[in-house]
Length: 342
Image 1 (tube, rainbow, N blue to C red):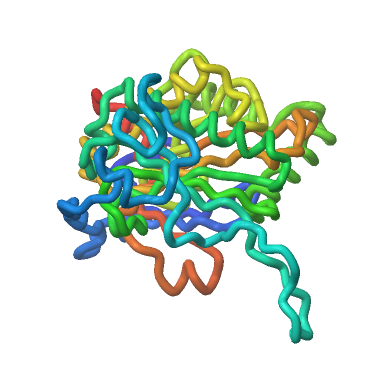
Image 2: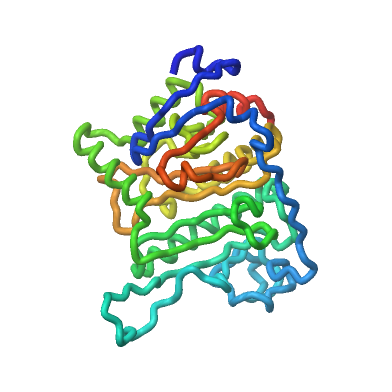
């Protein structure tokens, strides 16, 4: 992109293609001037009968994992992070036997669908949590993924967070979700296969080259730590989209070191605070991309987190054509986000 194209005053349209998935992104700065082009956050109040709050453990399913005080018992107060089966799961635990009277093959949607309750206190905005609590949350992510991987029952698991109604959250109390599946989601599968082909052809990791290119370019970098970088991707599908990636390729987040997890948590919180302070974005999704459990480092794949601010909805073009329209160039988004002191 030329210097002219990255100028805030520039109005020209440009098409960029995602190098892995191939989808086109049309950058259209004039779209940002439309009336109601940015969705207003929807206020959500936490009900008094909040099942996720401390002392309401009896209102939820039994916990699968918890970061809690050592002298406390499961399903009682005294926890910092609590992971429980989702009451309304997308996936179900395997059922023995098969359904009869069907002509077509039946593949059961078996797996884990869990809720990670991120605070015992009734808080709706995760940015209000302390740095220490963020670290506890991300350590809990890692430990639960490690436990599922050790079971050797499912092919893949991921973690995602929906904050705000625009992002799909039905419960305002801060929480995220985990889904373990018998199949590898197509987006992750495509990324792993691309990384494997890239490494086979070049002898290098695509993700390592990507980070080095972003660090050399510097225009799209939002912030960095010793081990990780946050940047706005070249073909961002959404305005102010960010990716958080370690500098050294490692396919599985559940093998991340304590220091990597701590820096991930710190950068994630700062990234979300930057969104909130710079453009008032309090509704967003973030999702972990991590390799299938049986994948090894030979693919050159690298776990990473993707952050999607929910500033506007997708419409007919995106749904019907597999292309995206973004009114904000990632270079401009990164500059604005980087200017914020979280």
